[in-house]
Amino acid sequence: MQLESFKILHISGHHLLPEAQCLFAGIAPYSCLQAVLEHAAQTSVKLDLTYDAIVCTGDIVHDVVSSHDHLADAYELFIQALRSQYPQTPVYLCPGNHDPLDLFAQLVQHAHFEPAKLVAQVNQAVVINLNQYWNLILLNSQLPTQVGGELTQEQCTFIQELVVSQPDKHVLLALHHNPLPTGCAWLDSYDFKGVDKFWQKVQALEAIKGIVHGHIHQDIISMVGNTKVMAVPATSIQFKPHAVDFALDELAPGYRILSLEANGTIEQQLYRLDVVPSVEPITGY
Image (cartoon, rainbow, N blue to C red; front, side):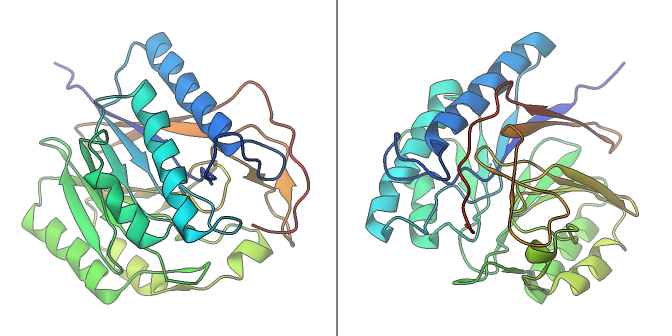
């Protein structure tokens, strides 16, 4: 008998602004997020599947052009968008470098955002039991006030101890920052503290089957030993691959569907919107 897989909708990089009609690089991030969520819902119908969970790996809001107080309204838009399509689906969240942690932490206190779990404290790791075969570990890789990230020795030890204590469970890690180089010089110039020690731990742990992340606004899949590392495109603007300097790409927003199988394999499929939003040039984000 074939065991049922655990289905995850992975999204990231929304960069929402305080009002739905606000523009960033010529696009309306809220409209793009709505379109991605609707597309994902339509895809689930076509494939005859139900999402068991939604994993969001950060940069929910865009803190560069909005005041801290106004960003609370942007998080409200995020909740509205998700719950209009997925009113009961569990949501698991990691903060990005653009997410103020105090506002991000308040997401789980919202009456219309249950069930949801997140990792909000600096250097924090949280484990979620998905089913009898899989654990999800949410990692906060945010380094406050910095674009680059950090994973601490405490987080690495948490991962190692969990794997040792539950040897029969496969593990999926979720974080915002990319744990591997991207091939984009400007992105790779940002320091990710502790990532080398992180890999020393992870590569020794066969139970860690996958890592999902955002941050780079690109679709990249790599294998590091036994671990599949998957970067998901943003639901907003896309970054041009292999660029020396910051540059936008002319690709549509996207999302990834993951199937976590009982035997530890991860099947995945990337989807993008059918229409590419018309972006305006910007010099950075």
